[in-house]
Amino acid sequence: MSENTFDKVVVHPLVLLSVVDHFKRSKQAPQKRVVGCLLTEGPPEKTLHITNSFAVPFDEKLEKPDVWFIDHNFLETMFEMHKKVNAKERIVGWYSTGPSIRKSDLDIHEIFRKYTQDPAFVIINVHQGDGALGIPVKSFRSIEEVKKDGQESKRTFKHCPSEVGAFEAEEVGVEHLLRDIKDTTVNNLTTSIGSKISALKGFNERLNEMSKYLQDVLAGKLQPNHLIISNIQDIFNIGLNLDTNNLNSQISITNNDMTLTIYLSSMVRSVIALHDLIENKIQNREIEKRLRMESYKKTQKREEEKLKQSKENNKN
Image (cartoon, rainbow, N blue to C red; front, side, top):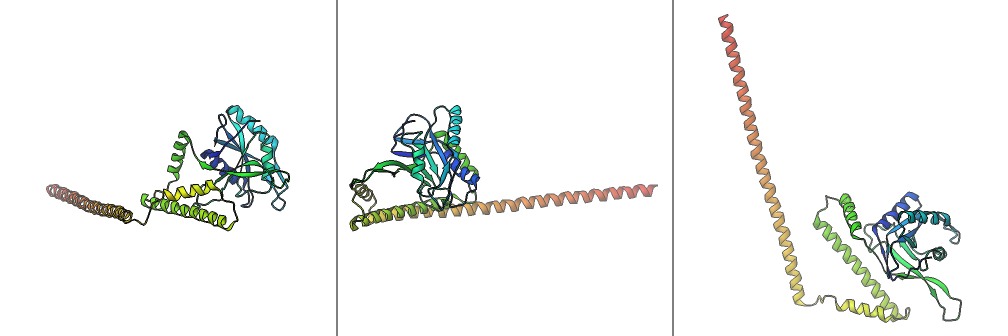
């Protein structure tokens, strides 16, 4: 059993593609999910890089959450095959398409504790649409929860920071993949504005989360966490002061410069289009003139041949 202690999870693109392919091939109903094994390379680190994965046969009854099945033999056989290809790979946890934690997940998590001391549980939401905010990845680890009232302790899931990352070689592959699926009919300005709108929506959602947390603390629903409150204070301290006249003036100047650039670009594009139109008109006139000259020469040649033939007939 390998040791695996981590504070942060980084999911690589190959894993995301493999999970989506697993879900699509399984042809599961939207409310059902698929499960698989997560792999990594190298020694244990505080930041866990999940670089590979494979599917594991899994089934469960939605009406009976305690009834589920996972194929241990298949998991071990597939891992041995992966080891033959890459001996450095080791099991670091498992994934589920969720989209949330279910009652049987702790029991499944205990199975993977046989292969690694501290497995990671990653929920990859394959149902998340283009307009959704944030990344479709949530990571958890299990910890021992000690009861204050003397009751028996039990394991529970603790959320871990997660992100989507890639090594240099993976970034090149992702760029080529995005280049193939990029919509060429959408210009850069539209893409830029869409990205800014998504960023503002995400920012607004985070502000609402912070506001709800502070309101729950004031209402006594949650215990105050000084680390969280300190982070919130730091976020607002480094934010821009939108009430100053100088900032408003700078924003107006920047906006006017961008608008002027867009206007000049449109004017240049229009002038170039008119220039191409005139050039096309001149070329068409030249072609028509050349065709008329060729037609006139052919007509003159036919007339000369007829006249010559007529003279020869008269002589005969």
